[in-house]
Image (cartoon, rainbow, N blue to C red; front, side, top):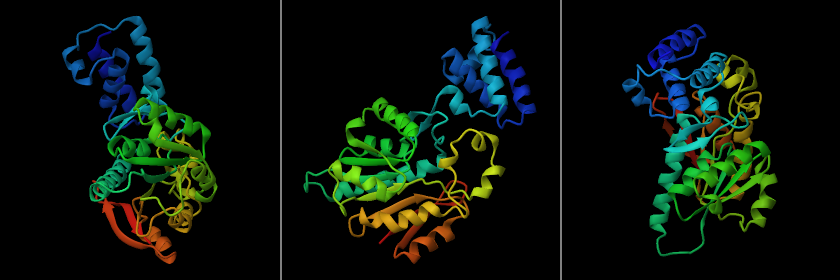
Length: 298
């Protein structure tokens, strides 16, 4: 069977299974199996696959038809241009979270420019709910003066995050802590040299879906992303309340809290923060026009 045959037959199969962008999906799976850039497939339509290659593709296509995420099948995903390992123990990073990373990096680089020639102490940042480590790693990779404290309640997720940090050479500048709240994370952060009220930034992509919404998600998310990374409680706001109550103790006076939101959550999350003494500075929209990134200060 040739490359073109595989693309055509697999596309038809994935279409019947309800998979979005079926041709793109099979092309990416083929690129993974054949270890070639996707665009090179177009120059290789007549190539005949070996039996070993065919069997590998068949297995992956079958699993994709069962709605297992593409990122799990190939073992990684790109986030802000960096390849991140992903497994069923972590949330697959979304494009919206790249916007949060970009906002954080812009702020940190601007702050470093203003502080040039000042204190030699590292700029401490807190990433709450680090998951795969994607936010922490991008900040550490792009902001050389930053020391990130990455907090995650799942030990299995932290193992993935540590591997990603090692992959990108930023392990010395990320402190990983296993904790389910800011209060629980503080003793480990303090033992690692942190001082209350000295953090320049707190960022978080917290679980923000209402519990009842999870059942209606696409199978790729509902059945394969860890539930603890999705479930934000009855109204989806549990972790915003926790961040609003606890983040101020970590931050320097006037330093920002940056959080990702669900597409329809800006008003409710803003209310949670404002009730607890935060001033919502601005809300950034994603490429679909949804209010997605909230930035607030005490």
